[in-house]
Image (cartoon, rainbow, N blue to C red; front, top):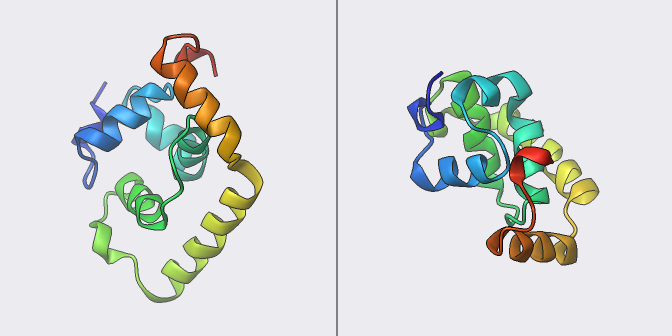
Length: 110
């Protein structure tokens, strides 16, 4: 099994965030896809950030982060906005982040 950071565009901070929400390998990330992975990041307390979202999409596809342009980027923006509108609860995210910090929630059980 390959580490998440073996994927293009994924650095140590993103890898750590993904591991915290139960995505432990590059294969798992590819299998569940960028949208599901990003939804887990939001549920785990990470703040929404469009660039991080489309970079994750590019990583899963093995493409450079700056390859996302034009109509593709516009379509991803719509998907990002919909994902954030339906799945990001600031209060819940803050609470889960705190519970994670003190070890109450096991990321593998989400």
